[in-house]
Structure formats: structure tokens, C-alpha cells
Image (cartoon, rainbow, N blue to C red; front, side):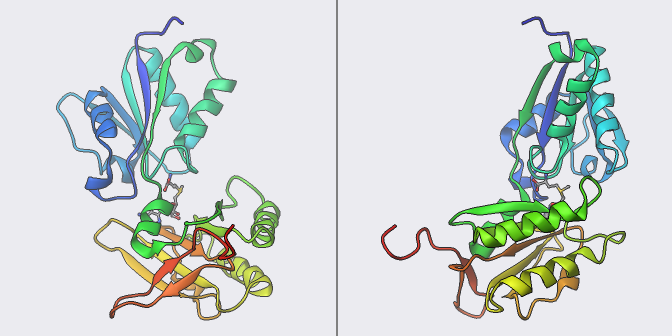
Length: 256
Ligand SMILES: C[S@@+](CC[C@H](N)C(=O)[O-])C[C@H]1O[C@@H](n2cnc3c(N)ncnc32)[C@H](O)[C@@H]1O
């Protein structure tokens, strides 16, 4: 296939800690002539001489994707950055959506996705092994989908007895949904279900709270928090003086 001169790497920066950025991501960032992304993520990328930076608002994903594609089409080597993994509630989907609905030459560009550690993996590593059996991830943000769809998926996840990783649980503009989500969970799951609030994992202000569904305070969640809700087999393993480990066993204990 013919490629235009430029290229576009969609790069995951991981959840925050420098040591969680992969070598492939570091190489892609060093090679880029232009870096496009939300300002908060650009601050995490080391500067190099001659490299241009294009900061934008966090909510303008499609505009940012189109800007990156235009630059690549003009022969630039562009890196568009996302926190965590770029394929999880992030820029990779926005770029491919923009390609699908955009100009024909964008389809001939050299586009690749550079994976990163997602928040749920980083949180799970800190907590023990909460994702050891079947799990799902649900974003609570209703910027891109209606609340009815979110509520329907939460109920389906509860009925399927999945461990649930909740992304985007709350923000200043959306303080109520996490309360509605907990009300829905409390109606359908045991109050003893383990629950964890993993905030700013891998950053200096990291905070972990491990509790139960009955005791959990939804106000602990903000836009830097990932919440893990256990399944019926998830348990808390007490050790030392630290928070208990949150563990979802590999099987159901009956040999299957
Ligand atoms: C727009 S989503 C992006 C997810 C990202 N692409 C990923 O793979 O982690 C933003 C949400 O990810 C979660 N998140 C991102 N970084 C986090 C961190 N360091 N600690 C806890 N949660 C984080 C929060 O739920 C936040 O509201």
C-alpha cells in the first residue's frame, strides 16, 4: 500500500508513573516532529528541541484526531497521546472514526497504535489480583452515551457476575452519577462485596481505599479514580497492617 510521507502514532502514556511508559512509546515520542494531545498529558512527555506541541481541551477528541491526521498528511511524524492505553476510552477510536468519515488520503497514512498500561491494570497491580477472573470495564461518563445505556450495562454486568472496573466515575460537572451507580449496585449485590477506590495510581498523590459495597463512600471518587467492584467470588485477604489484598480467584472452587 502507498503511504503518504508522514506518520501517525497513537501513543499510550500509561497511568502516570514514568517507569510505566513502554520503551516503544518512548521511541515513538522521541521520533515525533509533532505531539498532539490534551495539555495535562503533554506535560508528561519530555521536551526535545524542534518538536512542536499542540495542546487541546480534553473533550475535543475528534477535533484533535483530525488535527493529527492533517499534520501527518502534510508530511509530519505525529504522535497523538492518551493516558493509560490509547485503545481504552481514549484517542485510538477517535482517530479511526475520523479516518472513516474523513478525507480519502487519510486512509493511506502510516497509522499505528502504541499500547500503554491501562488504569485498571495499574490499579489491579496495587490492589492484589481483583481481575483474576472474568471482568468488564464501564465508563460512567455520559458525555458520549446516555445514562440509560450506562445503567443497562451495569445491571447486565451485575447479572453476569463480572468484576466491574468503573472508569470516569465522577467529575465536577458529573457528581451525581456515581451515587446513582452505587444505589443500583447496592440493590442487586451483597453489602459485603469488596470495593476499591484507586486514585491517581502511579502518581505522587496516589490513594487506595479498599472497603465493601455496604461501607463505600461514593464521594471518594473523582476524575482521577478507578473503582473496582468485586464479583460474588472476590474476597479481601488480610495481611500485615496494610489494606487487605483484593483477590478474585481463578476458578469457582469446584474444579472448574
Ligand atoms: C478518559 S479515561 C482514559 C482511560 C485510559 N485510556 C486508560 O487506559 O487508563 C480517564 C479515566 O481513567 C481512569 N484513570 C486514568 N488514569 C488513572 C490513574 N492513574 N489512577 C486511577 N484511575 C485512572 C479514571 O477513571 C479516569 O476518569
